[in-house]
Length: 107
Image 1: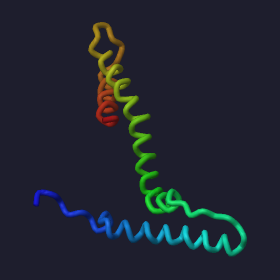
Image 2 (image 1 turned 180 degrees about the horizontal axis):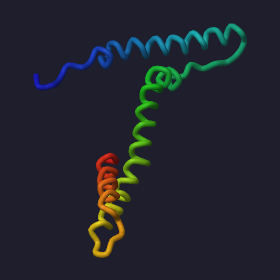
Image 3 (image 1 turned 90 degrees about the vertical axis):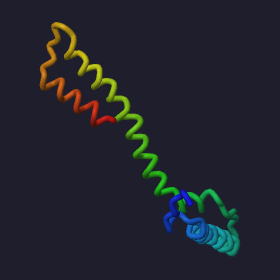
Image 4 (image 1 turned 90 degrees about the horizontal axis):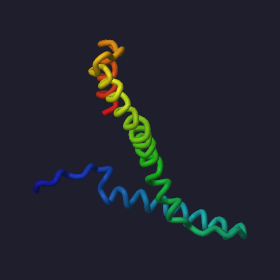
């Protein structure tokens, strides 16, 4: 009762049907290759990749950008902003605000 309903596109019936279609394509490719004398083994990996690959690749690329670039710059901006508070600092107030904005934007 306390769980949300799954989206229609995330239900196992929908996902299973689409994966079955991809698997059928692999089996058909195998049948056609045997008719032409070639040897092709159906690949579950290829079927899974066609089914889920593009969506998860997009998420993976986004995660790489976030973790490898944005997360690296956050402590740099924080350090530059903290220089403003050191006695005798040459960092201007405007620069400190920009560094603070950088910290927020990288979070």
